[in-house]
Length: 337
Image (cartoon, rainbow, N blue to C red; front, side, top):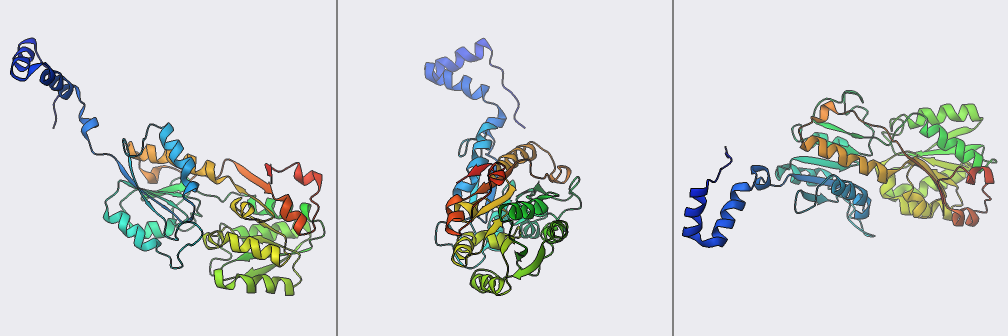
């Protein structure tokens, strides 16, 4: 254990004579240096399924505001299982990369969209999961227990509001396709049941549009068109999100209006989205990192729901689809592109 050293006048003069003035100054600085400043930097692993590193900018900025300077007061190991930029890799390397982080014995792991895989990778290292559906992963939102907590993009009423906005924007849409991926098609945060209930209230016929992923997306859109679907609403799903550019392109090519969960679909050319504000969610994740590094247990920190929401409309896409978005809908948007 490091005990603080107290330099008396005699000891200082002896040191000064032996080492010279510069050595004496170094002796004082060494004696005044706290054990904490000599301790190794806390090291965290950050794994994001997004292919754009800029997604993590709000997280990094929030860490800086909390006093964590990367490379100086904290070390961060980044992993991107699905690749970076416009050429993401095809295989899912999430388990392998999580194993790497566990092998590095990091102090904490932050994941974006891979909560279940992270939970499988370790039951000892604290985990903060961002943008996930905690159903079946934690004991409860209020007291998650175990080594995982975080923030979910699921909140009561979001799926219903999404369908409501879609039908307000396109009043002629009477048959809407719910696009998702089996086997979790009906389990993604209860979105399907909530959307079904909302469809009943709105007098809309809701039909399933199932897809297995990248190689099956065009077939899914063609099937929806053959089934006389007027518009599509997508499930909150990491695989769909990874293929958001292709989905936005196909929706335009197939002349299929769609509303999405994440605003990144709209940035990619999608018509509109309604859902959690992801930058704000990532910012809030930094506060949990801080609390855990200071000694809090993840199992005692509640899984929190979104606090800020986006409703973004792409008017260029609306024009390409031959749609005129009513002023009453535009007035509800948080941003119009």
